[in-house]
Image 1 (cartoon, rainbow, N blue to C red):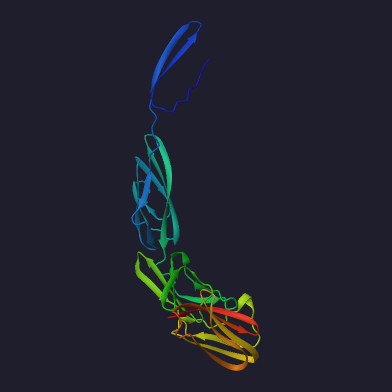
Image 2 (cartoon, rainbow, N blue to C red):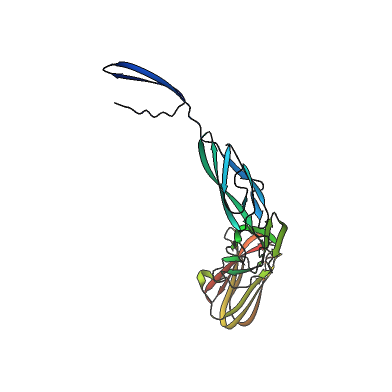
Length: 290
C-alpha cells in the first residue's frame, strides 16, 4: 500500500512503513523555493515616437523579454525602440532556483508631431445654460484645455458649462500639449462673445430678432437693446438676492429697435436678477453691480 503527502513548507519529513514482516522508516529534507519577487520599470515611463528607453527588471536570476522593438531579449535590462504610438506592452518571464513568474509592463509612446489645431463651439441659447466644447483632430487624452470667461480662468476639460449665464460672456480656450520631446505647445482659440436670447424652457419668442443686455458687470447703468419685428408688450423688473424688487419698468408696447435704460446707481453692490418680460414670457439673467 502506498501513500502521497503534499507539503508546502521546507523541513525534514519522516515516513514510517509497516507490513507483516516488520517496520521501517526513512527521512528526507525538502526545500521549497520562493517564486521570484519581480519588479519591472523604466526611466522615464513614457517616450516620444522615434526615441529609445531602457526597461529593467530585478528580483530573479534570469530574464526573458518579449514585445516590440526589443534588443537584447535575455537580460535584466533591455533597450526598446517602439514604432507604434500609444500603449506598448512588454512581457518579462523571470526565473530563480527553478521557479518562475511573469509580469507585463506598459510603456506609453507619444506623437511628437501631434495636431494641436482646434476650435470651440457652444449650444444652449434657447435654455440660458451654455455648454462650450473644444473640437480638435488630435488625441484629447494628452491635451489640457483651460477655459477663460471674461478674461478670467474658469475651469479645465474639454467642455465648459455656464448655467444661467450672464448676458454676452466672452469665452476662449487655451490648449496645452506637453511631451518629453518638445517644449510645451500652446494654442489659443478665437474669443467668442455670446449674443443670444436666453429663453426659458426652450421657448422662442416670435417677433424677437435680437436681444442684448450690457454692460455686465455694471456700475449701475444697464442697457437693454432689442429688435422687434412686430409690436410686443415689454416690462422689466430687478430683484435683489433676498427677493426684494428694487426696480420696475411698467408694461409698454414696443416695436422696431428698442433701447431701455435701467438705472441701479445708488443700490448696494452685489448680485441682482434682471427679468425682462416679453409678450408674457419672462427672461431672467444675473447682473453684477460693482
